Length: 454
Image (cartoon, rainbow, N blue to C red; front, side, top):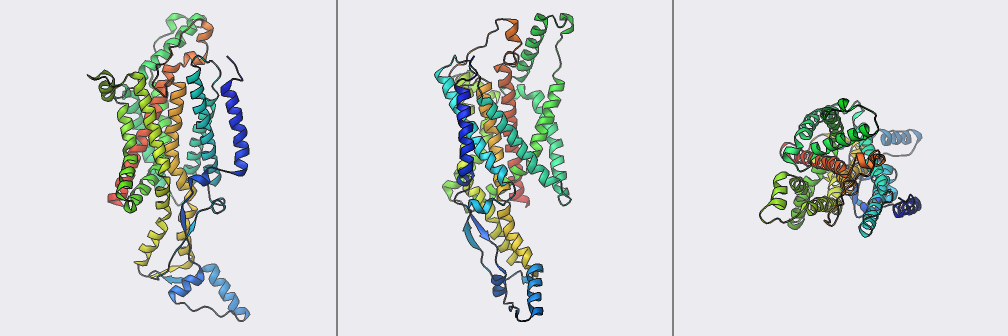
């Protein structure tokens, strides 16, 4: 087993390119290219539209009055007819926005992480017996950690404030709800889904007991079958914590989806619907009825390896669709400014000019956060999909996998043997299916709220 093998060399090259690449370019500009934001109306524009006479600036007192008016604002009738001007979103406009650095690092790092993983998978296809250290898994784990870190920062920035008590209570309620749902899901997943989680747990316990016996660490009478209850509770806490942080990202996506449907053409509406419903199709592929029909049915359309490959490509296809449709979704978020102004013009009374300008600018200032909320629910299952392929020994082209063999007690002491591909396949499949289920359920809840309640 070579330490400086092809995987390590590829990782070092990618790391060097990433360090040089970020100094001059970043992929976030490509992801947000073609978006347009609305400029807040200036004071002069508002005064002209509202027919407010300009103050005479002659004299020291008049100049002070004008400065106070600009600092405190002035009243504008809500029905004032004024226009908002469009401007293309550029990199220099976004550099001062909140969470810009998080968004840039997320896009850049995940692109190189998935690229390194794809190159490593292609190399393993060319040399299936290669035993080099696959460093691309470290890239994927760091990518998943960075996704969760960004989610935590978004959630904490939103919740730890005195003005968001309702949102805080909503997140706590969903965390409790998904903890209960995760407990039911983990304990009964083998009844409905093709995950084989219980078999993987029993395999892990058996191999650990065999290793302890071979090393004379414990007597055979002390090594009994262990209950997976502690594992169920731990996974449920982990899933509930992740689901609570995915509440507002999926609600944001549901809002973008609802508004983009209103201005989309019929072919685009069909693509938007397919993208919205595709995670449900991926979950159905993991059910036992789908497995029984496709693998053990009368026609036997696929074998086990081909079905696993189909599941992976379904996740990748959904992620690519979401990335390709980023422009109409994110533009629908920026268009909320003109919709809010249109609804404001139908109201009566006055509004402060500064509050009006802040209201228009607020949607652009939230662009990086909205982009993170749009991409994170996609990137998390995508990274889990690559981890499942690499650590779970799933081929991208449906080839049969190689069985692992034990030759000595020293090999049994290896984590790669104790936590073998069967165990990791069950674990990463469980995480992938639950993340898709959380995204789908929260998106449906958000869409129903935007369509029938809001």
